Length: 425
Image (cartoon, rainbow, N blue to C red; front, side, top):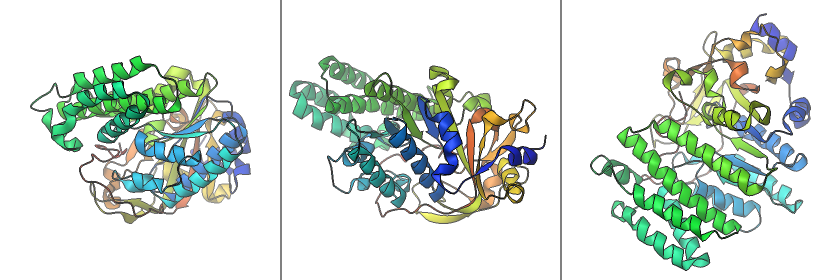
Protein backbone atom coordinates (compact mmCIF):
# COMPACT_ATOMS: atom_id res chain seq x y z
CA UNK A 1 0.00 0.00 0.00
CA UNK A 2 1.48 3.39 -0.98
CA UNK A 3 2.27 5.81 1.84
CA UNK A 4 -0.05 8.41 0.38
CA UNK A 5 -2.98 5.98 0.49
CA UNK A 6 -2.15 5.05 4.08
CA UNK A 7 -2.05 8.69 5.11
CA UNK A 8 -5.51 9.27 3.63
CA UNK A 9 -6.80 6.24 5.57
CA UNK A 10 -5.29 6.96 9.00
CA UNK A 11 -4.48 10.70 8.92
CA UNK A 12 -6.62 12.93 11.12
CA UNK A 13 -6.66 16.69 10.64
CA UNK A 14 -6.68 19.01 13.63
CA UNK A 15 -7.55 22.61 14.36
CA UNK A 16 -8.39 22.33 18.03
CA UNK A 17 -7.26 20.14 20.94
CA UNK A 18 -10.60 18.28 20.73
CA UNK A 19 -9.43 16.88 17.38
CA UNK A 20 -6.79 14.92 19.33
CA UNK A 21 -9.40 13.14 21.46
CA UNK A 22 -8.68 9.70 19.96
CA UNK A 23 -4.94 10.05 20.47
CA UNK A 24 -5.37 11.45 23.97
CA UNK A 25 -7.53 8.45 24.85
CA UNK A 26 -4.67 6.14 23.83
CA UNK A 27 -1.92 7.96 25.72
CA UNK A 28 -3.72 9.24 28.83
CA UNK A 29 -2.83 6.22 30.95
CA UNK A 30 0.82 5.98 29.89
CA UNK A 31 3.52 6.54 32.49
CA UNK A 32 5.57 8.67 30.10
CA UNK A 33 4.43 10.73 27.10
CA UNK A 34 7.26 12.24 25.06
CA UNK A 35 6.53 15.12 22.69
CA UNK A 36 9.21 15.83 20.12
CA UNK A 37 10.16 18.51 17.62
CA UNK A 38 12.12 18.38 14.39
CA UNK A 39 13.59 21.86 15.08
CA UNK A 40 14.37 23.89 18.19
CA UNK A 41 12.82 27.02 16.72
CA UNK A 42 9.27 26.36 15.48
CA UNK A 43 6.22 28.10 16.97
CA UNK A 44 3.70 25.36 16.16
CA UNK A 45 5.72 22.67 17.91
CA UNK A 46 5.73 24.61 21.19
CA UNK A 47 2.09 25.65 20.83
CA UNK A 48 0.73 22.17 20.24
CA UNK A 49 3.00 20.50 22.77
CA UNK A 50 1.56 23.00 25.24
CA UNK A 51 -2.03 22.19 24.29
CA UNK A 52 -1.52 18.43 24.51
CA UNK A 53 0.42 18.77 27.77
CA UNK A 54 -2.24 20.93 29.41
CA UNK A 55 -4.93 18.44 28.43
CA UNK A 56 -2.94 15.62 30.07
CA UNK A 57 -2.13 17.70 33.16
CA UNK A 58 -5.66 19.04 33.66
CA UNK A 59 -7.69 15.95 32.98
CA UNK A 60 -5.52 12.86 33.22
CA UNK A 61 -3.40 13.23 36.36
CA UNK A 62 0.01 13.79 34.82
CA UNK A 63 2.44 15.23 37.36
CA UNK A 64 5.12 17.22 35.57
CA UNK A 65 6.78 18.34 32.36
CA UNK A 66 10.49 17.56 31.96
CA UNK A 67 12.35 19.36 29.18
CA UNK A 68 15.63 19.41 27.32
CA UNK A 69 16.91 22.26 29.53
CA UNK A 70 19.14 22.94 32.53
CA UNK A 71 17.90 21.90 35.97
CA UNK A 72 18.63 25.17 37.85
CA UNK A 73 16.96 27.42 35.26
CA UNK A 74 13.95 25.13 34.99
CA UNK A 75 13.65 25.07 38.78
CA UNK A 76 13.06 28.85 38.63
CA UNK A 77 10.15 28.18 36.27
CA UNK A 78 8.94 25.41 38.58
CA UNK A 79 8.89 27.77 41.55
CA UNK A 80 7.09 30.39 39.47
CA UNK A 81 4.25 28.17 38.27
CA UNK A 82 3.72 27.02 41.85
CA UNK A 83 3.31 30.60 43.01
CA UNK A 84 6.59 30.79 44.95
CA UNK A 85 8.45 33.19 42.64
CA UNK A 86 7.01 36.09 40.66
CA UNK A 87 10.26 37.31 39.09
CA UNK A 88 11.19 37.28 35.39
CA UNK A 89 12.41 33.70 35.53
CA UNK A 90 13.04 33.18 31.82
CA UNK A 91 16.08 35.48 32.01
CA UNK A 92 17.81 32.63 33.85
CA UNK A 93 18.01 30.71 30.57
CA UNK A 94 21.31 32.37 29.71
CA UNK A 95 22.97 29.42 28.01
CA UNK A 96 23.02 29.60 24.22
CA UNK A 97 20.66 28.95 22.45
CA UNK A 98 18.60 31.09 24.81
CA UNK A 99 15.62 30.99 22.44
CA UNK A 100 14.87 27.35 23.29
CA UNK A 101 13.26 28.36 26.60
CA UNK A 102 13.51 32.15 26.63
CA UNK A 103 10.58 32.72 24.28
CA UNK A 104 7.02 34.00 24.23
CA UNK A 105 5.63 30.49 23.77
CA UNK A 106 7.13 29.36 27.10
CA UNK A 107 5.74 32.50 28.73
CA UNK A 108 2.28 31.40 27.59
CA UNK A 109 2.96 27.86 28.80
CA UNK A 110 3.84 29.21 32.25
CA UNK A 111 0.55 31.11 32.42
CA UNK A 112 -1.37 27.95 31.58
CA UNK A 113 0.56 25.87 34.10
CA UNK A 114 -0.08 28.42 36.83
CA UNK A 115 -3.78 28.18 36.09
CA UNK A 116 -3.63 24.38 36.30
CA UNK A 117 -1.88 24.65 39.67
CA UNK A 118 -4.49 27.03 41.05
CA UNK A 119 -7.00 24.20 40.71
CA UNK A 120 -4.83 21.41 42.14
CA UNK A 121 -3.78 20.56 45.68
CA UNK A 122 -0.82 18.49 44.48
CA UNK A 123 1.04 20.92 42.27
CA UNK A 124 2.41 20.00 38.87
CA UNK A 125 6.10 20.62 38.17
CA UNK A 126 8.41 21.82 35.42
CA UNK A 127 11.93 20.37 35.41
CA UNK A 128 15.11 20.25 33.33
CA UNK A 129 16.74 17.01 32.21
CA UNK A 130 19.99 18.25 30.72
CA UNK A 131 23.58 17.92 31.96
CA UNK A 132 25.34 21.19 31.20
CA UNK A 133 24.82 23.29 34.33
CA UNK A 134 28.06 22.54 36.17
CA UNK A 135 28.70 25.87 37.88
CA UNK A 136 25.06 26.91 38.26
CA UNK A 137 24.37 23.63 40.04
CA UNK A 138 27.42 24.06 42.29
CA UNK A 139 26.15 27.50 43.33
CA UNK A 140 22.60 26.23 43.91
CA UNK A 141 23.81 23.22 45.91
CA UNK A 142 25.98 25.25 48.28
CA UNK A 143 23.51 28.11 48.70
CA UNK A 144 20.57 25.85 49.56
CA UNK A 145 22.58 23.52 51.77
CA UNK A 146 23.78 26.49 53.83
CA UNK A 147 20.14 27.04 54.80
CA UNK A 148 18.99 23.46 55.41
CA UNK A 149 22.23 21.64 56.39
CA UNK A 150 25.22 23.97 57.08
CA UNK A 151 27.61 21.16 58.02
CA UNK A 152 27.08 19.31 54.73
CA UNK A 153 27.29 22.66 52.93
CA UNK A 154 30.78 23.20 54.35
CA UNK A 155 31.86 19.73 53.16
CA UNK A 156 30.43 20.35 49.69
CA UNK A 157 32.04 23.78 49.41
CA UNK A 158 35.48 22.36 50.19
CA UNK A 159 35.06 19.58 47.63
CA UNK A 160 33.65 21.78 44.87
CA UNK A 161 36.53 24.24 45.37
CA UNK A 162 38.35 21.89 42.99
CA UNK A 163 36.55 23.79 40.20
CA UNK A 164 37.56 27.28 41.42
CA UNK A 165 40.71 27.60 39.27
CA UNK A 166 38.53 27.56 36.15
CA UNK A 167 36.53 30.64 37.22
CA UNK A 168 33.06 29.46 36.24
CA UNK A 169 34.30 28.63 32.75
CA UNK A 170 33.11 25.17 31.75
CA UNK A 171 35.28 25.20 28.65
CA UNK A 172 38.39 25.85 30.70
CA UNK A 173 37.58 22.89 32.92
CA UNK A 174 36.92 20.67 29.91
CA UNK A 175 40.25 21.68 28.32
CA UNK A 176 42.11 20.96 31.56
CA UNK A 177 41.08 17.31 31.36
CA UNK A 178 43.45 16.81 28.42
CA UNK A 179 46.43 17.37 30.72
CA UNK A 180 44.89 16.33 34.06
CA UNK A 181 42.42 13.53 33.24
CA UNK A 182 41.58 12.94 36.90
CA UNK A 183 40.01 16.41 37.06
CA UNK A 184 37.48 16.79 39.87
CA UNK A 185 35.76 13.44 39.37
CA UNK A 186 36.61 12.06 42.83
CA UNK A 187 35.53 15.24 44.61
CA UNK A 188 32.21 15.33 42.74
CA UNK A 189 31.35 11.74 43.62
CA UNK A 190 32.32 12.21 47.27
CA UNK A 191 30.26 15.39 47.56
CA UNK A 192 27.21 13.59 46.18
CA UNK A 193 27.68 10.72 48.64
CA UNK A 194 27.88 13.16 51.58
CA UNK A 195 24.72 14.95 50.45
CA UNK A 196 22.85 11.65 50.04
CA UNK A 197 23.92 10.64 53.56
CA UNK A 198 22.04 13.67 54.95
CA UNK A 199 18.77 11.95 53.99
CA UNK A 200 16.65 15.04 54.59
CA UNK A 201 13.06 14.99 53.34
CA UNK A 202 11.78 18.08 51.54
CA UNK A 203 11.41 19.53 48.07
CA UNK A 204 14.38 21.78 48.82
CA UNK A 205 16.51 18.77 49.66
CA UNK A 206 15.41 16.97 46.49
CA UNK A 207 16.47 20.03 44.52
CA UNK A 208 19.88 19.98 46.25
CA UNK A 209 20.35 16.28 45.50
CA UNK A 210 19.38 16.78 41.87
CA UNK A 211 21.85 19.63 41.50
CA UNK A 212 24.56 17.44 43.03
CA UNK A 213 23.68 14.70 40.55
CA UNK A 214 23.79 17.21 37.70
CA UNK A 215 27.28 18.28 38.81
CA UNK A 216 28.34 14.63 38.66
CA UNK A 217 26.67 14.19 35.27
CA UNK A 218 28.07 17.44 33.84
CA UNK A 219 31.59 16.49 34.91
CA UNK A 220 31.14 13.12 33.25
CA UNK A 221 29.76 14.71 30.08
CA UNK A 222 32.63 17.17 29.71
CA UNK A 223 35.08 14.35 30.41
CA UNK A 224 33.54 12.23 27.64
CA UNK A 225 33.50 15.18 25.25
CA UNK A 226 37.21 15.93 25.70
CA UNK A 227 38.85 12.60 26.55
CA UNK A 228 36.70 10.32 24.34
CA UNK A 229 36.43 7.79 27.18
CA UNK A 230 32.76 7.45 26.25
CA UNK A 231 30.46 8.84 23.61
CA UNK A 232 29.26 12.25 24.81
CA UNK A 233 25.87 11.86 23.10
CA UNK A 234 25.25 8.63 25.00
CA UNK A 235 26.45 10.11 28.29
CA UNK A 236 24.01 12.99 27.85
CA UNK A 237 20.95 10.86 27.07
CA UNK A 238 21.73 8.32 29.79
CA UNK A 239 21.94 11.14 32.33
CA UNK A 240 18.69 12.68 31.07
CA UNK A 241 17.09 9.27 31.58
CA UNK A 242 18.55 9.12 35.07
CA UNK A 243 17.00 12.48 35.96
CA UNK A 244 13.63 11.39 34.54
CA UNK A 245 13.79 8.23 36.67
CA UNK A 246 14.52 10.26 39.83
CA UNK A 247 11.63 12.61 39.09
CA UNK A 248 9.20 9.73 38.66
CA UNK A 249 10.37 8.29 41.97
CA UNK A 250 10.04 11.67 43.71
CA UNK A 251 6.47 12.20 42.49
CA UNK A 252 5.39 8.76 43.70
CA UNK A 253 4.64 5.25 42.46
CA UNK A 254 1.75 6.37 40.25
CA UNK A 255 3.59 9.37 38.78
CA UNK A 256 3.15 10.22 35.10
CA UNK A 257 5.56 12.39 33.10
CA UNK A 258 5.47 14.53 29.97
CA UNK A 259 8.80 15.07 28.21
CA UNK A 260 9.64 17.79 25.69
CA UNK A 261 12.78 17.19 23.61
CA UNK A 262 14.01 17.06 20.03
CA UNK A 263 12.90 14.12 17.88
CA UNK A 264 16.51 12.93 17.96
CA UNK A 265 16.09 12.35 21.70
CA UNK A 266 12.52 11.08 21.93
CA UNK A 267 12.22 8.91 18.80
CA UNK A 268 13.41 5.35 19.48
CA UNK A 269 17.05 5.13 18.39
CA UNK A 270 16.62 1.49 17.31
CA UNK A 271 14.43 2.67 14.42
CA UNK A 272 17.07 5.09 13.07
CA UNK A 273 20.63 5.06 11.78
CA UNK A 274 21.78 5.93 15.33
CA UNK A 275 21.85 2.25 16.18
CA UNK A 276 24.50 1.68 13.51
CA UNK A 277 26.81 4.13 15.29
CA UNK A 278 26.33 2.70 18.77
CA UNK A 279 24.20 5.65 19.87
CA UNK A 280 21.17 5.51 22.14
CA UNK A 281 18.57 8.07 23.21
CA UNK A 282 16.01 8.96 25.83
CA UNK A 283 12.95 7.55 24.05
CA UNK A 284 14.55 4.18 23.41
CA UNK A 285 15.91 3.97 26.96
CA UNK A 286 12.49 4.72 28.45
CA UNK A 287 10.83 2.06 26.31
CA UNK A 288 13.44 -0.44 27.49
CA UNK A 289 13.12 0.50 31.16
CA UNK A 290 9.34 0.93 31.50
CA UNK A 291 8.03 -1.15 28.59
CA UNK A 292 6.62 0.04 25.28
CA UNK A 293 3.08 -0.19 26.63
CA UNK A 294 3.95 2.47 29.26
CA UNK A 295 5.68 4.97 26.96
CA UNK A 296 4.21 7.06 24.14
CA UNK A 297 6.67 8.64 21.69
CA UNK A 298 5.14 11.39 19.54
CA UNK A 299 7.22 13.06 16.85
CA UNK A 300 6.63 16.43 15.19
CA UNK A 301 7.51 17.36 11.59
CA UNK A 302 7.15 20.23 9.10
CA UNK A 303 7.44 20.48 5.32
CA UNK A 304 8.38 24.16 4.95
CA UNK A 305 8.15 27.57 6.61
CA UNK A 306 10.40 29.64 8.88
CA UNK A 307 12.55 28.65 11.85
CA UNK A 308 14.76 30.30 14.47
CA UNK A 309 18.34 29.02 14.27
CA UNK A 310 21.90 30.23 13.78
CA UNK A 311 24.59 29.68 11.18
CA UNK A 312 27.27 29.04 13.83
CA UNK A 313 27.70 28.06 17.47
CA UNK A 314 26.88 31.04 19.69
CA UNK A 315 25.91 32.96 16.57
CA UNK A 316 23.11 35.53 16.33
CA UNK A 317 19.47 34.53 16.24
CA UNK A 318 18.14 34.39 12.71
CA UNK A 319 14.78 33.68 11.10
CA UNK A 320 15.60 31.23 8.34
CA UNK A 321 13.45 29.76 5.61
CA UNK A 322 13.00 26.00 5.70
CA UNK A 323 13.19 24.68 2.13
CA UNK A 324 10.55 22.19 1.00
CA UNK A 325 11.27 18.67 2.18
CA UNK A 326 13.75 16.69 0.11
CA UNK A 327 12.23 14.60 -2.66
CA UNK A 328 11.01 11.20 -1.41
CA UNK A 329 11.68 12.15 2.21
CA UNK A 330 9.04 11.58 4.87
CA UNK A 331 8.26 15.31 4.80
CA UNK A 332 7.78 15.21 1.03
CA UNK A 333 5.39 12.27 1.29
CA UNK A 334 3.41 13.93 4.09
CA UNK A 335 3.14 17.14 2.06
CA UNK A 336 1.95 15.37 -1.09
CA UNK A 337 -0.90 13.78 0.87
CA UNK A 338 -2.31 17.16 1.95
CA UNK A 339 -4.65 17.74 -1.04
CA UNK A 340 -6.01 14.19 -0.81
CA UNK A 341 -6.57 14.36 2.94
CA UNK A 342 -7.91 17.90 2.72
CA UNK A 343 -5.98 19.00 5.80
CA UNK A 344 -2.70 20.95 6.03
CA UNK A 345 -2.07 19.89 9.61
CA UNK A 346 -2.74 16.31 10.64
CA UNK A 347 -1.46 13.47 12.76
CA UNK A 348 -0.81 9.80 12.13
CA UNK A 349 -1.50 7.15 14.77
CA UNK A 350 0.85 4.31 13.86
CA UNK A 351 -1.12 1.78 15.89
CA UNK A 352 -3.63 1.89 13.00
CA UNK A 353 -1.25 0.77 10.26
CA UNK A 354 -1.41 -2.63 8.59
CA UNK A 355 1.35 -5.29 8.69
CA UNK A 356 2.48 -4.46 5.14
CA UNK A 357 2.64 -0.72 5.82
CA UNK A 358 5.36 1.30 4.12
CA UNK A 359 5.70 3.19 7.40
CA UNK A 360 7.61 0.08 8.52
CA UNK A 361 10.28 0.77 5.89
CA UNK A 362 13.24 3.14 6.02
CA UNK A 363 12.77 6.72 4.79
CA UNK A 364 14.69 9.98 5.28
CA UNK A 365 13.24 12.18 8.06
CA UNK A 366 14.41 15.78 8.51
CA UNK A 367 16.09 16.99 11.71
CA UNK A 368 17.04 20.67 12.12
CA UNK A 369 19.38 21.67 14.94
CA UNK A 370 20.18 25.00 16.54
CA UNK A 371 22.92 25.43 13.92
CA UNK A 372 21.33 25.27 10.50
CA UNK A 373 22.35 25.86 6.89
CA UNK A 374 19.19 25.56 4.78
CA UNK A 375 21.09 25.60 1.47
CA UNK A 376 23.10 22.56 2.49
CA UNK A 377 20.58 20.59 4.52
CA UNK A 378 20.50 17.72 2.02
CA UNK A 379 24.02 16.81 3.16
CA UNK A 380 23.18 15.88 6.73
CA UNK A 381 19.71 16.83 7.93
CA UNK A 382 17.85 13.67 6.96
CA UNK A 383 17.91 10.73 9.36
CA UNK A 384 17.15 7.25 7.96
CA UNK A 385 14.06 6.32 9.96
CA UNK A 386 11.41 3.61 10.27
CA UNK A 387 8.56 5.98 11.24
CA UNK A 388 6.14 3.48 12.77
CA UNK A 389 8.87 2.01 14.98
CA UNK A 390 10.50 5.31 15.88
CA UNK A 391 7.22 6.89 17.04
CA UNK A 392 3.80 5.86 18.26
CA UNK A 393 2.35 8.88 16.45
CA UNK A 394 3.57 11.73 14.26
CA UNK A 395 2.13 15.25 14.16
CA UNK A 396 2.67 17.05 10.85
CA UNK A 397 2.43 20.73 9.89
CA UNK A 398 2.64 21.52 6.20
CA UNK A 399 3.92 25.05 6.84
CA UNK A 400 5.22 26.50 10.10
CA UNK A 401 6.28 29.81 11.63
CA UNK A 402 9.38 30.76 13.59
CA UNK A 403 9.47 30.76 17.39
CA UNK A 404 9.24 34.17 19.11
CA UNK A 405 12.41 34.65 21.21
CA UNK A 406 12.75 37.02 24.14
CA UNK A 407 15.74 39.32 24.45
CA UNK A 408 17.83 37.10 26.75
CA UNK A 409 21.60 37.59 26.80
CA UNK A 410 23.74 34.47 26.77
CA UNK A 411 27.07 33.88 28.52
CA UNK A 412 29.87 32.83 26.22
CA UNK A 413 31.84 30.86 28.82
CA UNK A 414 29.04 28.31 29.00
CA UNK A 415 29.15 25.33 26.68
CA UNK A 416 26.05 25.68 24.48
CA UNK A 417 23.00 23.52 25.02
CA UNK A 418 22.75 20.69 22.48
CA UNK A 419 26.56 20.82 22.04
CA UNK A 420 28.29 19.25 20.17
CA UNK A 421 25.59 18.01 17.78
CA UNK A 422 22.73 20.48 18.04
CA UNK A 423 20.34 17.51 18.03
CA UNK A 424 20.94 17.15 14.33
CA UNK A 425 22.09 13.67 13.37
